[in-house]
Structures are given as C-alpha cells and as structure tokens.
Image (cartoon, rainbow, N blue to C red; front, side, top):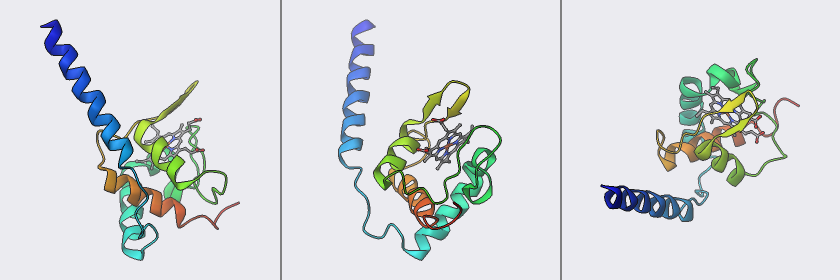
Length: 117
Ligand code: HEC
C-alpha cells in the first residue's frame, strides 16, 4: 500500500512539472474573445472575493486592475497555486481550471492594465 501511494505521489509530482513547463503565455492573450470569456469566468469564480471586474474585495483580495507591478506569468502562477497570507487566502485553481482557462483569466486581468489606479 505504501509503495502504491509513493508511486501516486511521484506521478502527481511529474504531472505538476510537466504542466509548469508548458505554462507559456499564449500569443492571443489579449484577443477580444479571450478577454470576454475571461470576464465571464472571473465573474463566476473570482468576483465573489475580488469584486466585479476585479476592483478588490472586502475579504483582503487585492484589486486586479492596473496591476503593472506583476507579470502575466506571475498572475498565472498565483492563480494556479494560490497563496496564503495570514487570514487572506487565495485558493489554488490548478486542479479545477484548465491551463487554457487560467490564461484566459490572465488575459482578462491584463485587459484592465490601464484601469483603476
Ligand atoms: C476566497 C476568496 C478568493 C477567491 C474566490 C479568489 N481569490 Fe484571488 N486572492 C484572494 C486573496 C485574499 C488574495 C491575496 C493573497 C495575499 O494577500 O497574498 C488573492 C490574490 C490573487 C492574485 C495575486 C495578486 C497579486 O497581488 O499578486 C491573483 C492574480 C488572483 N488572486 C486571481 C484570482 C482569480 C483569477 C480568481 C478566480 C479564479 C481568484 N483570484 C479567486 C482571494 C480570492
């Protein structure tokens, strides 16, 4: 039983590595269709904490508008892995959203680069 579990962990780890290696920004990150899809997905899964259009929420979730301080790759990484900062918890979406969906969310966030602050 123990060996089987180790094998499972190894497989999961390798799968994780493969996913990270292929996490490359798509060339159509800011294509209007992608941004629109991202807006809908964001409204469904993220606005609960981040506010409509990522304006920032009361739960400690930061604004995602005008984020010139983070790269697209960093946004992708945080969405996949989540982050815990004391009481502020950003859930990990690597298991529930596909890589394509996560880039679509990054596209939407990127489309708001010149909004807000
Ligand atoms: C349960 C509440 C919650 C949900 C739902 C949530 N987030 Fe977050 N998110 C947070 C919090 C809280 C932080 C800040 C964590 C910290 O302080 O480091 C955060 C941080 C982030 C960051 C990092 C921003 C930075 O400053 O680097 C990104 C990007 C992000 N969220 C995107 C998303 C996306 C996309 C979704 C939907 C798939 C989502 N979040 C859903 C609570 C949430």
